[in-house]
Image (cartoon, rainbow, N blue to C red; front, top):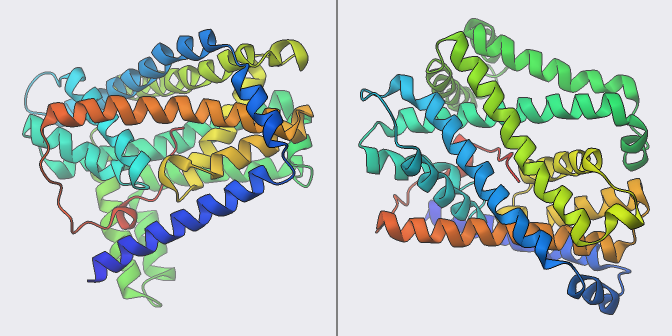
Amino acid sequence: MKDKAKTILRIVVSVVLIAASGYYALKDVNFSELMRIVSNVSYFWIFASVPVILLSHWVRAMRWKTMLEPALKKKSASTWNLFSAVMIGYAGNCVLPRGGEFIRPFVYSRREKVSFSTSFATIIVERFIDLITMIFLFGVIFLFLSHKILKALPDIEPHKIIVPTVIVLGVMIVSFYPPVFRFMIRLFIKPFSLKLFDKLSQLFEKFLKGFAIIKTPSQYFRVTVESLVIWFLYTIPLYFMFFSFDFHLSYSLNFSDALILIIVAGVSATIAPTPGAIGIQHVMMQVAMVNIYGISKEAALAYATVTHAVNYFIQLSVGGVFFMRENIKGIPSKVDYTSELNTESAP
């Protein structure tokens, strides 16, 4: 009954947030103008983005293989099976917020007969790597394009960009020096909440287990390169969509602007407690494009809607096909998806 209540609560929260963000995005928007813009997009660039999106997911499967292989008894993991699990996980996220992060390792461990805990540990580490990569990209973009970002975030002070850097360093310290983390939670968490202390301890041990899988410098280098390639491939479809909407002509948008928008999309996917970041991503993209580039609310919302819809359709349809391929008849129901992993960085 308790699990059912949590599920109902998550659904209610998601519906309320989708409705609220939908209202905010459509407020003061000329609906007929919005429909006109959407109906006039160039479908060539939409279709051109599809193979790039699929390739980005394939590279994510390759990175997962890099992280998993040292822990596997056999010599090589199947990239195809990893890709299948990745797409099923994305499809799961389109239906249940964060749900795909449990479904993905479940599907792979079931097919390859490997430890679920090992597979799940790499997912936790993967999300930290995505977060670090996103912060790194934001820092680089802010360094060269701060004048544009400050238009969207007028209240931010440039020197405060040091905060994400401190976060990255903190993650590195925790990763390489586990006693620091254990000491901190014993000092600041355990005296006030033993239950929270136990949960954080368990989650951290899973993180360490996943992190320990990457053992050699060559693997660190490969994971770094693959992470940067993933985000580069994520950016290309957003750049293609500029041509679909003629933004490259009317607003002189280029690849650097697509880099700004992929960070916005990444942040929205990370914080959104809705399936597939529905609503939250639309609002954040719309606000960013209006504030930074002076694009009309209708055009910005049309761009956000089409780019999100393309990704959502690919994840749901391709993931659905692989779901049938795996012949999954049931997934354990007594799982609190959000208690073990509460971040999702990929758009």
